[in-house]
Length: 226
Image (cartoon, rainbow, N blue to C red; front, side, top):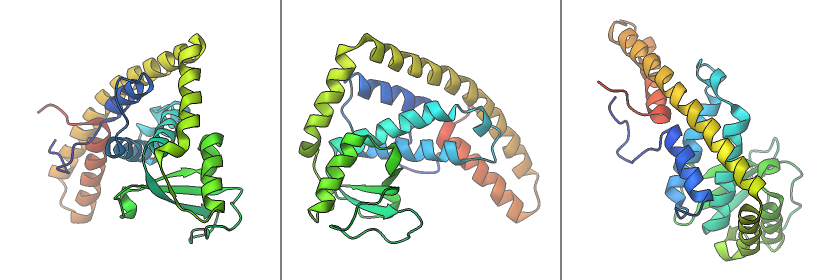
């Protein structure tokens, strides 16, 4: 497979390894890598037409996705918007915080919406939401890592002090690693099937659709061997 983007993409099994290294404190959070990981996970979880989607353990991968979002907003300075449910316009700072909706976060120096990350308000850690609510009530729509120091300290203590928490993380990682390995092989077989169909397809519209499916497989599962 040829890379569709000059920027380095994380495959889904690399995301799992990166998440584990972040949790263990081996790697430091990178806004670019976390946003990249979240986008790839969203693509994998949203592809309802793919047979691979039905083999993904959505609750497990969604748990990692949520955790990555919490890491992003608590370790990177940025700008945020809050969208109440069923509303295309963001809420005005200082207004009532919505009971449900979407939090949209733009890491510092990022302005394009494509480079932002979103999360359902109900899936963000309550301590993080509380800090955003305070900022919002003060009329602010920006945060810094310093504002989440207490949250990170509590999270770190919880990780370090309980064997159960570490055991849970290890189990979650092993589940995802095994699943990613099996699905990668299936995805690569699917890619070659699509490649054959596209090569022999005379209909331009259908060929474009096939190539789009191939591109999605490349982004999520990586390149196949020639």
